[in-house]
Image (cartoon, rainbow, N blue to C red; front, side, top):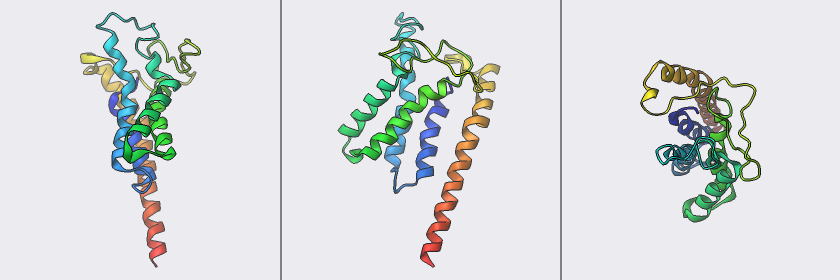
Length: 177
């Protein structure tokens, strides 16, 4: 998996790219929380839930159904975000997690189509180092993961966000003239 930092960063970058008029800071932070949420499934390890189980790591919490259900629940229950646009943003943030996990080079794959299909998937192209879990994150392997994420996720996210900010500012200045 990419680190939780990268999972959270990408929705925040998307919110910054779209601008406050489309994505409020609260909605952006909710999106970041939903992007991290699937990895709470690691609590299954100490409970004896095997990695390969549908209830294990990268199981049902990494599915399109889970992303849709959790995004719909937030969009319906949280008054400030009751709209289809908010649901769409939250769904994209939630589904970004398993989609980015598909790009990693470790683990047993992602149950993207659970409950209809329990097959664990990877993409052929796996440019992102899988993040070590727990204290092993503070190792050479963890540093390699951070390097790959900075190059492949953070840098493009920052460049797009900065570009969108400059574009919005230029457009606003032109309309004021």
